[in-house]
Image 1 (cartoon, helix red, strand yellow):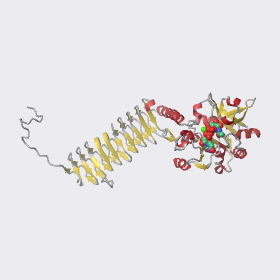
Image 2 (image 1 turned 90 degrees about the vertical axis):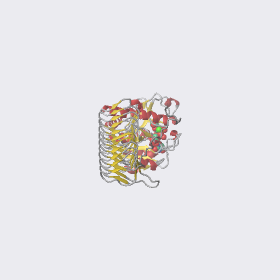
Image 3 (image 1 turned 135 degrees about the vertical axis):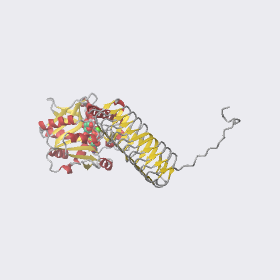
Image 4 (image 1 turned 135 degrees about the horizontal axis):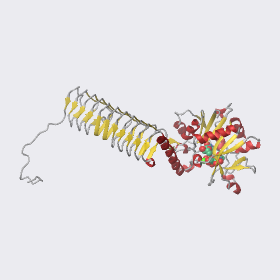
Length: 462
Ligand code: UD1
Ligand code: CA
């Protein structure tokens, strides 16, 4: 296919979603639904993409600020033809083909799109429309054909006569047009119809009238071209997309024990021989290495997990980097901006926030590590807390290499524990500890002898 430009229609509100959020920003597998036609167009070879935004246009634009797409604005929604016109300024002097996609048709695949574009090119059409045969054509524009079977126009449900309503071939809303023809034809369409709108499909009858080549290209997978109109459609599309994503990972060598309960967002990458147990959700732009084991009930968001990492059951991991051979959980909470270096261990009921845990260091049980830098080979005893917050500000804790922190220690930040120092169990450390020193800060144990009396009835054994 020669170079082509895509115009993505995304100005409509989506009334049937009954939402405060514009339809095209509702997410499917972690991405706004309109991100999918953008990806599909790119995969089919499109360079330039123009998004026509209207409702909540600033939010639509913000959602794509890292994407190489242009925006055009349709201030008033006067119909799909009027919407395409809004993109004209971006296309002045462009003589190639314009692919028109809808922001609310997320399941179209690059394969189907490429076939459609090829047919458009091979047949030298000025307009090609992608159509399908549907047993339930209600609500869609119907494809009209003359007695010879040639495509002659599209009639909308609300404008159709009773015999036209029985037609089962419908317009998917996906078009490819010669740019010059498109914008000339859009000048000629009116809004004299039941909805008082400028209908994009009317360019077909204009092409026919002018004796130009128009065609309806039929595809057979109706799921691919299904538009999202309400929350039921959204849930169905989510399911289809999720299955596609899982199939892709399994094909690449990932074991998914229970696809029905595994949720992986579209932009997650996973290395081969990683095994994913049930009830796992991998979100956003997470990158999972190879040879990992992700046990049940883990949620990983926007994180980078190295190779051979073991996530034990029920971990919540957000914007964290866990390097090779790290072990995390069960029941660990890794909060944003944490880095767990190679072979370190974050055990059960441990929370880590904005901290670095050095290579081979261990915090095995019941600990809070916040705003801390922990060196190599450190042992953090059970129940250790970094007291990082004084009610107003956050302070840093530094624990240097090979430190031993006894159980149930409070480290009141800012505080520095020098290399190879030890802290006795139960200490509250408020001052820096020099390298290799032992710090103990707890009340001395006192024993009262002969406290037990044989005539004491309070539960003592006779
Ligand atoms: C449209 C087609 C119909 C086709 C169906 C497929 C028209 C007139 N009809 O109907 O033949 O079977 O899609 O799903 O086009 N939009 C704007 N601005 C507007 C109006 C629409 O950007 O002023 C966008 C919408 O956001 C949507 C697309 O155009 O992405 C289609 O518009 P919509 O109102 O959904 O048209 P349908 O009634 O579904
Ligand atoms: Ca629609």
